Length: 122
Length: 427
Image 1: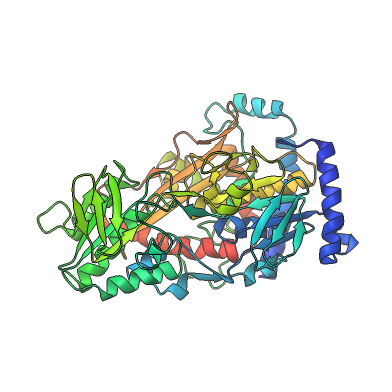
Image 2 (image 1 turned 180 degrees about the vertical axis):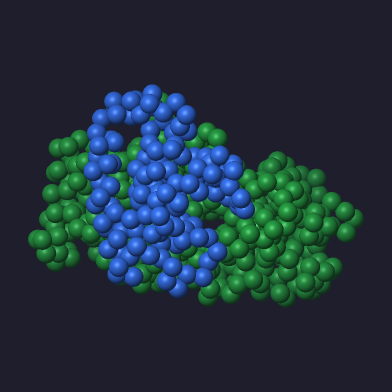
């Protein structure tokens, strides 16, 4: 459990710079809007802001976990990105709910949240 | 920096820390982080308290909650249906204490936004740099239904003894009896909750009281996940046939109830119940309204980027009490709002820009123990309006007419979700 806590703090510290940069000025938001014609969002959120919402269903540790939703903490970044993009495109197999949720994120957000979970120990 | 100037912020933070140090004997080394008081230990308050500490462990967080344990509303219908015992959905505050949250079992009787202080029932006063208010819902008593009546005719819309009371009454009801449920008007906590409750009672009756009937008298014209619930009721409980266990009336004008005879008087007819479940209309928790956070209305307007009140500076309102639409009043949404609020509170305390928010809501309902359905949505700030908005193209309902495997998976996910979100909130 201590190990896990530590990893959360590290992840928060690492992505703090990203958050500050992304929100430095209202102009930054406008640029993001133009740059992503295909994105669903007007301004991208950080990997940690999105990642915290995933933790409502995805447990952050495999220890003592008896649930059915996969633990994504510590999963390889590329694997998460691939899966999320398949959910978003509607090409994933055995879909329950993630196809509906994955459509809520831009490709850059998917990369960011995958990096956030890949760094986490489980 | 919504609604607060840098000068105001520094003055408030400085004053708050000085007083906070006197009250708590906080060492100077930690005083820089500031003091956040959180009112309410439900999904919103507990998550906010924990995540403020996770994001910035130098911030001192005091959570004020009268009860020593918290019974979750999600899962309480499963207790009513006999799938769970009440102890299995009861949380403690030990997990929050391990994160360094100071948990005070007391009640806030008064908030002074100018002095940035809260008064406790036990007599003490606490000062804050920022206050997070998450008191859940209160009921609008009336139409013959009072708080005293609720001791015999449960609403069971705040989980705990009310849940147990309804379960006991259903167990004591003879086979062939009638259970009547009266859902509330919008907006209310847990929009799919009444239909899940009907499902869980139907599941229990099917096994133990097959001659019993369920009548829903709903003042509204439609309900959350209606198509999916009706599909499930047709498959499992004979809905729409002569032998239907469930009879659902919509746009019913509820005139009053007679508690002595358990009769619901409507615009056209009277319905007598053996077990009556009356769920009153709702409003923000008492302390939120008493503080003026709801203005002249029932619910509290907020700035979606921070959840800071648009009426009173320095106070954030999250969970059911806030107006966060299109986010629903759900435990999942409260948890998601609390994380956005926690990140914003830390940024504001550090005088940094507030991070770009992101929210998810996923509501699972059980139609039967192996039959689950859901609605999900991703939310963002619409920067054109500054308001919370659904991300276009995201979310939606479980597919209609899906194979049983999909329904079974969602039932497993529903139970898995309960385990994970309670650990995320209180663990």
